[in-house]
Every structure is written in C-alpha cells, then in structure tokens.
Length: 190
Image: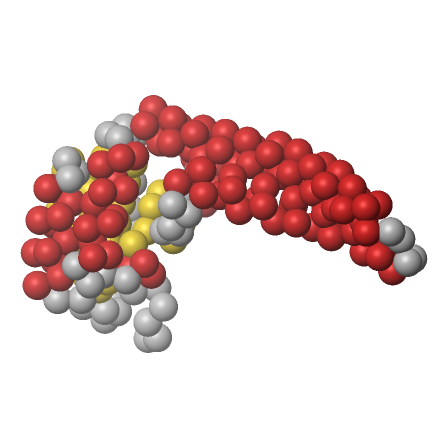
C-alpha cells in the first residue's frame, strides 16, 4: 500500500541492449506462465515526451517513473511476419476486386484468371510498400530506444514467486539494472 492507501502494482524491470535479447526474455517469460498482458514496453519517444511534457535523455530515468508512457507487448513474430500479412491481405483484396466484376458480368474464365493475377499483383505491390513502412517504423523505434540507453521491459508480478522468476529470466537474457519496484495502482478505487 502507498501512503495514500492505494495498493501497489509490483513490476520487474530490465533494460536490454539488443532486440534479440529482449525478445528471448519475453519468449521465456511467456513459456514460464506470464501473460502477454503482463508485459509492457516503453512507448515511442514522441509518446513518452508528450505524456511527460518534457524530453528525456536516458531510459534509466523512466524505469521507475509511473508517468512514463508504455505500450503493451504485441507479438508480431518480427517485422517479416507483419510484412507477409500486409502483402498477403492486400494481394487477396486486389485480386478479389479485379475478379468479381468480370465474373459478375459473365466474363470468360481466361479473362477472370488474368484479372485475378493483375489485381493480386497490384495489391501485393501496395502491400509490399506498406510492409516496408512497417519494417522501417519498427527499426526506427528500436534505434531510437537504444540511443536513449536501451529497450525497457516491464513485467507485472503478483507475488514473490513471480518476482523471483521474472528477475531470473530478465537477468538470464542480459537484462541490465534488473529490479522490482512498486507503483501506485492507478486503476484502484479509493
């Protein structure tokens, strides 16, 4: 409990110098019973600075700051999976958009198949461009966070056993400054 009587949220926190180490820690946390909803990352620099109302030089200052903007962990299996999903979806939609009018108009099978290929190709091209933007955005986010001192990972813990497991996992995957802290539960009613 805090001095105000609000309960504390307990979290393990660590800072990683590579995306690979952080992802390995996340995978290990998930395989040891932690839920995706219990894992948070630092939001983009723009979001953090907007929430704080000022710029920051190092993630070290944000590790224990309850006002730091965070984002939920979302497993996209890396930027390549996101690229594939975007390209595939837009290729399918482009093909479908080209195919439906010809079939509906009683067009020949050959014309319908050509339209399917052309529509799918243009949809895939648009998808590839969007996928590159996703990949660039992800790479920019990682580079920006590393320039500020590392990739911060928070893990919500519910008891001492969770705290021990989370800190062990974060340290095992090269997490730096690994520790547990308590923050006021902003969702708790007073």
